[in-house]
Length: 379
Image (cartoon, rainbow, N blue to C red; front, side, top):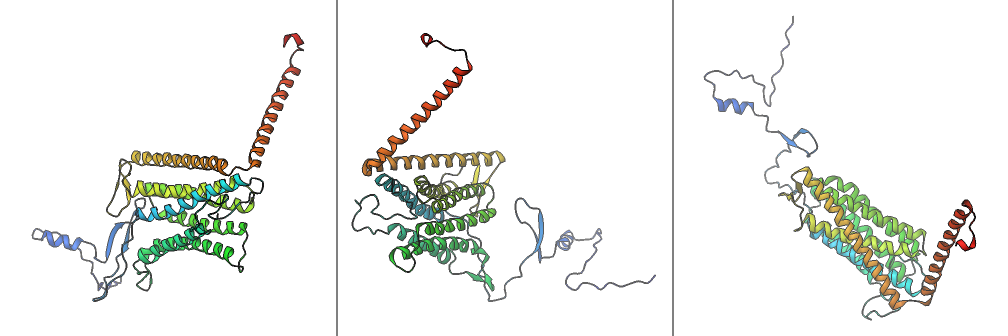
């Protein structure tokens, strides 16, 4: 048999330690430790332990610009919530006022001027205030996400800083809403881009679709209660996408127009609810916020209770938005009610009563025909 010699490793030779009576315990423990270039850590709560290489230390005089990932905050949810709530509430009132003022000539709008419903607005308010709020608010929030939150450390170590990918994703989504506001302003104030309302509705739906895709894939990084709140947010954003697309397909539908504004307002309220519950003083019982700002529920029962509380909060906000929409329609009908509105309502009620009466008579005829003949005196 020929013996083959194995060369000894240069970096760290493998030594077989035979314990003896005179062996030093501290020396044995030091030799049994793993190599310092490797570390054993947990990658995620639902994944197994994995061994990964630790990044080599920076060279002397070189400082790494990779910062730790920033946890979500309450102001980061309140600012977009305020914009969505303001635009959605105004859209609901404007749709109700336009329909009450002219129900027969009603047309859906992707945005609403301030003088909707027959005037009465202050003269100093611009007619395109909604578009200014959308474009300006989206641009302001985009600057906060891309410039302030990143501290201009967008690139690090020859590539994009991984600690600020979250901020850049938000900035890309806000860019779509900024483009919608700019395109609508160009369409209204210039003659170079005369887009119809249907096209503007599709542009708005594209912005909401970008938001939906962002939160759908971005929510995979959220676990537990945070992930559930963002999942409900995805559902609300999907309603915004559906209503804006229907607005382009049904340009004369009043229910679609008011539902679009209600969905936008509901999204703003849910941003507020998320900020107060997860990152504010209303954290559910049995859950805590760790040092990194993430939510951790102690037990599975506490997790289920917190999710049920989130469902109840969403139902309450839906009821609140519906009550607001009904109130807006009642006030608009009282202030800007067109005579055709009362005529259409009377015709609708008469048609419903006639339909019910015909259905009742048909049921009675079928019952009498199937039974024995009745005398007139028996009725």
